[in-house]
Length: 96
Image (cartoon, rainbow, N blue to C red):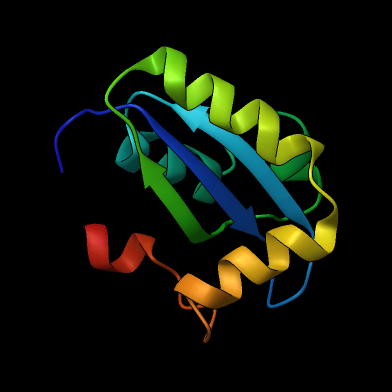
């Protein structure tokens, strides 16, 4: 996967704590989260599993989508994850 804007959701476990983020390099950014190189929420709450992502053509569209998803109710985020990844498989493993 080449560098490309993306919106992603990390989870601590199935139905656990969720984190919504945006990046221009998904593989690198998730690796940083997994290895606790990113200070803050994901490190504090052990949110390391990539359970959903969406690629975008531009960073602007990715940022807009991230902002919209962050406003969603938790149940909507869970439904979106479950529809694309019903077993909550760590999608990072299939990227590397």
